[in-house]
Image (cartoon, rainbow over all chains, first blue to last red; front, side, top):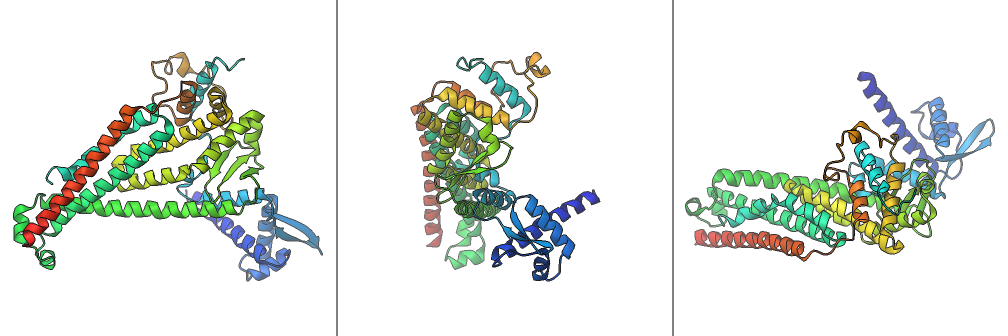
Length: 129
Length: 312
């Protein structure tokens, strides 16, 4: 249980760092290398942590990168509505009433509901099989 | 005042009896309005009642009675409510105000966050497609709002069914369904007895959007199939039509929809003939609300007279 709580704490801290780095990259004039990011963060997360976080954010398609010297320089993806949608999910996921705010087309079904649904649609005469 | 002041609270107990027929038997747009207005009126009336009861307790306190130039002694003699009742009413009022402001603050922030995010999504037609294999689709409230659909959902449906999905989600945005849900939620926070009404609003706005999609595409059965398909696409268990529950006839009793979730109920409603406006239900709801509002006004007037009487 202790390990569990610890794992969650680390996860949250990573999310916060990602948001912090994203903010930094959005305010920067151009692409930044991990060294520059670490420097602007005041050396709080170590260089290797910054590299790990940037690589993960690149893998999540939150950032694009281009080679510069022996490292990559990262910029946020901004003009893509897909990026905006992913960020929207990150922002709204923490809200306790998000399900009431977002009107989902088809809510999660229970197993009994799924069976009932198949029955209902199976008995529909226009269904055709 | 002795009876009238308690009426809104007693009438709130009828909420489950009102919620079910309105959501199952009344045309959904009208049902949504009736349910939301009922929640608002009953929440307001019951909150005012608690306030009136609490005031009758406060004027018994000599210090406060002096401030209002009332006679605490006369108040104790003519007071319609026991001090214990006034105290309980005061506490309940405090909880109600606290819960309502918490819900209001939280929902306002969530809606503002949603609107901010919607504004950040550049799109010519309000539709945002997210590259994600998980089938998902929802309306994001904003000025204007956005319809967000995952590629997984688009793949799960055929072309004509995409139009149904979009018509449904756009109906949520153009009719501002999130506001109905928010108002009903606020009322239920102030008076938890009204929760069945707020839950029913969550269901009837979906039905409202389903029927809008049916009007746009002209085929209710097709909307039902699309909805079922989308729901099953997001459901990750194997086809269990031969599950033991069915073999034993557990689902085979007279009304299998009793206790079912919202999606099967929506599908069944779309496969059944369209619902009418049901004048009986409108009249019954109007009568209930008139009695609640009238009782509150009556109780307020009585308290006013009492204050004038003991203030002489």
